[in-house]
Length: 220
Image 1 (cartoon, one colour):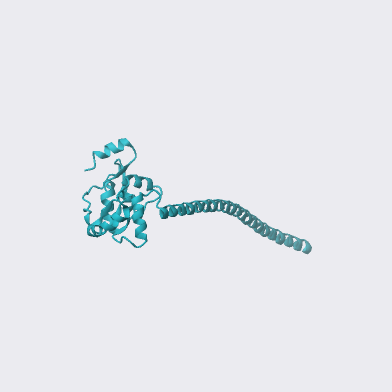
Image 2: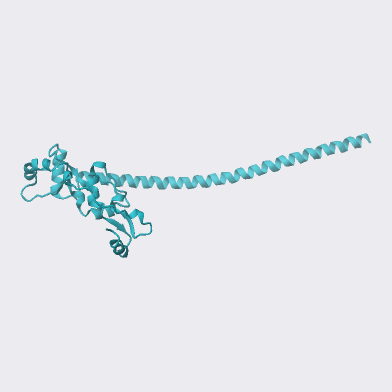
């Protein structure tokens, strides 16, 4: 009887221990499954991140190449009229201090908006800038000698630019036909603001010809 009692007690203890061990095994299996799932997710995430990193590197390489191309074009002044190119070259040599530079050099726009801004400027980006009319008058002889008899440039004298006089703001019309003002897509320093507003403040961006017609009836 004593042996039976001891055997039953041992059996109960072993059974209890087995239950505990099975619980530990179940918990461990659950953690293992979760770890494997997490590992698969990490592998998937790593694969996705590697793909994104490769795409970002390709985009960076393309952008750096584009930047280098644009810098070379800017240095060579490709697309700039011969007279303007001549004046800018002279200024870089330390001559013609009256000329501050070319308007396009002081305007910045995002890549997506640059073609629209360029169209809105309609060639005004090649205007030469001067602080004062008197400075240009003083440099007249040097400019004439530099450009020759057949050369010509346009100079925008900032002291002759009138303040922008329109209070109309299309931003107040949420459902209107106007997407933006051209000047909203351009960045420039404060000293250039009067000239920039005169050139671009009255140019509005629309999606279609019908929107342009509708906008014409709204803009004062």
